[in-house]
Image 1 (cartoon, one colour):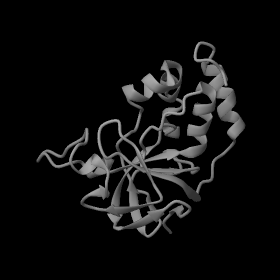
Image 2 (cartoon, one colour):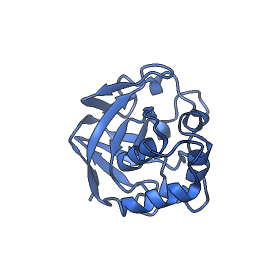
Image 3 (cartoon, rainbow, N blue to C red):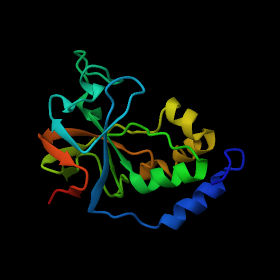
Image 4 (cartoon, helix red, strand yellow):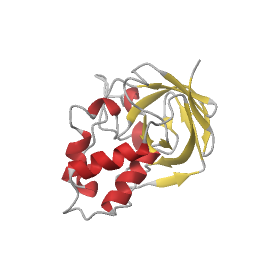
Length: 186
């Protein structure tokens, strides 16, 4: 662990390179989470995904930051997917074990090149679709992991890697469990 005072972009770059390429087509769902309320996190072994309600038990359906013109929650941000290897690396580097609140955690290459907007993924028995909305990290993320990590994620060369994760919407309802595959649809 490096103290936040010693953490530099070079340290993050070097640590990121040690991970090597992430799996491109499929990965195991390592953790699931819903946010029942502001700053609340609830780990789950299984989550029902619904095109109208998102992850059942998550606050998206009644309190989200993005809305359609008619006031309904924007389905493009129903789910958040985070690369578990990247998150573990950041937590080790910073000594911060904060849970960012994403819905699914899997060690999958989330880059724009690998999973462009519109790509469909199987998540357990559900089908989800990668959104065109960028997850560029929020002020809460910066507060927990520090300004160096926050700015490193937002560097122009790193933005297409989607290191903070990606947003998705539910296309086909279903159940996703910890241990299920998260894989690109054929």
